[in-house]
Amino acid sequence: MSDDPGSGSADRVAFDPVAFLEEAVQIPSHESVGSMRSFVVETLDSRGVDASVVADGCVVAEKSSPAPADGPHLALNTHLDTVTPHVPFDRGPAEEGERGHEAGNAREVIRGRGSCDAKGPLAALLSGFLAAEPVRGRLTLALTPDEESLSLGAAALTGTLPGSEPRLDADLYLVGEPTGLDACTAAKGRFQGTVELSGVAAHAAEFAGANAVAAAEGALAAIRTFDADADDHPQLGSPKLTPTVIDGGDATNQVPADCSITVDRRSVPPETAEAFRSSLAAAVRAAVPDDVGVDVALTDRESPFFEAFSTDPDHELVEAVAGAARAAGATAGLSADRGGAVRPFGAATEASYFAPAPTVVFGPGDLADDAGAVAHSEREYVRVREVEAAAETVERSISRLLGPR
Image (cartoon, rainbow, N blue to C red; front, side, top):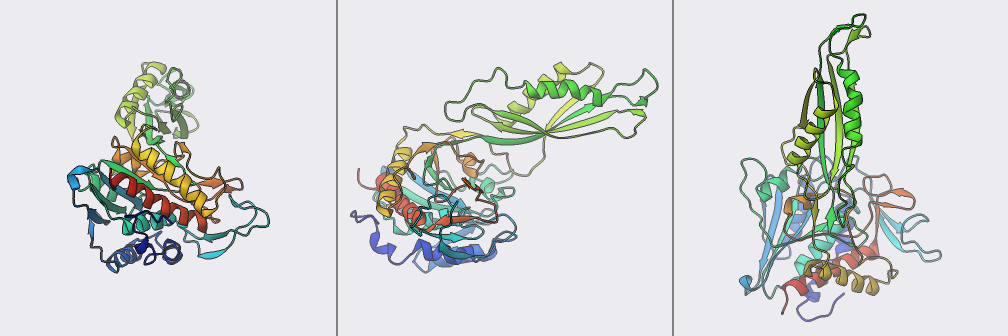
């Protein structure tokens, strides 16, 4: 751990991120985050930090420096919930196939639901927050309750939920997710919509009606070629549009009047959800017969879709996190190629709600390793040394961003 003056290393003795993670993984939070939220609030309170529960169940705590106007407002964010089902806790040696394992060197891992997504990142963020003593600027810890479902908490916290008022408006965001200790500066957005084709029913024996199912041929062609002229994003590459579900027709001897196609959209900046919807509607309209109606709608949801975001890889926040991760990884004895890279993140996250403010996604663990899925899987795990390195990375990053100039 860092021994730099002002790094708060004395507080690190009072908070052990690995011990916290061991307890946290044993608390089920796939159906309700109530117990997990209480555990976090009690952890903060026991160390003299007042935490508030606001905005549909978010936990918020703050530390202000003696000179809050002389530095940025940095927010540390991750989520308290996990996916179903709960997977029991276990701690033991890494096994073959678990990323980072070296033959003959039994590196410990913590297994169980949430170990990497996202209680491991939470442990690191809490550790850095508790150790922090900002010299300038402000520091906020903002934990959300439902990232794995509708993200109503994050939407309410940022004021993007209809009827809500913004409670968090930071200059910089560090978002905890499993990135293998890399600094992730961008992620594709994720939208879902439905293409509704409406024709006119008729007896299949007659040359009559307007066949909505037949019109799907043109609609699918429009979907397939939708991004033919799209430019690649410098960090995220090309967008992706995938038809996932198709349904139409009511009887085997009837010209079908209706057909629907559900699509999954992985967007890149600067595309918004509404811009995607209107562009797809125009493309499908041009590709199907005039006697077939076209309606393209985004799937109803209470909170906004996750739109794509990107942060300049040369931003100070990125440099601070990536540099700190490389240093912390070396201290923890991790391999030289583990952590500290600057790259996009592979999944959509609540980081979307914080853009366009500079945002980095960071944390211990992986979405997947060479043996398959890790996050959201029955074999979810995180390496103990990575949790320790992540905690040091967060502490070092805060010290650089909110410490003396």
